[in-house]
Image 1 (tube, rainbow, N blue to C red):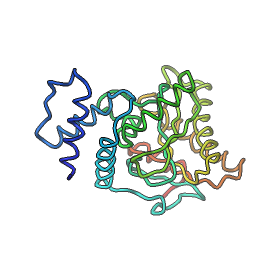
Image 2 (cartoon, one colour):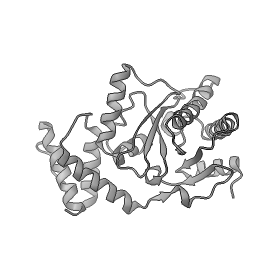
Image 3 (tube, rainbow, N blue to C red):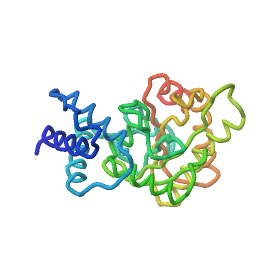
Image 4 (spheres, rainbow, N blue to C red):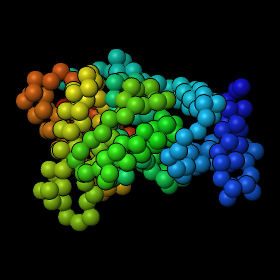
Length: 259
């Protein structure tokens, strides 16, 4: 199978799972097929599927990610001891763990092709991630608390693990509680990573964007919390501040004194 064959196989299998999709037509163009495949994966509820599907899905996703280009931690230059700043797609970063800005349900974003990091991570990790997260939530018996973190496998991503944390949602003026909860997200991820022997972790801009935390204040909290944790604990864990937008890169660059 080439990528086109794999994509058609996956599309037909996902369409065949649901009677409501029986009249759904597969687009003839590559971009349309890719968008439909991502949409079907995004809305699929957490449930098992056979090994044939997973085998084809895994090869498809890994090849798609490889085509985007993988960035290795070893190729990055630290801006200070143990701390890095990198602008790029976190789903293409090869390090020990990346952080997902999750919602309280923890099973991902169900909006087809939504551009949030939660959707991107679940899309490129594969459907196994939603299933694992669903198992964690069922065992816990309630939604994930803001400021806490959970660890899962990364499946088809270049990293080894994903740390899922729920940041505060800002719906009005920023409060001290919002700030404490955001700092707790970073601390919880660092503590959980160290507990599991993780040597490097990439943080996204937690709670900004869809959760409306002011970007500059969020970055200040992120940098201060990481620095304080490293100094207090003597941790040698490597931390990558990952940004996607140019505005966030400039904010972090100024805070970290990066060239």
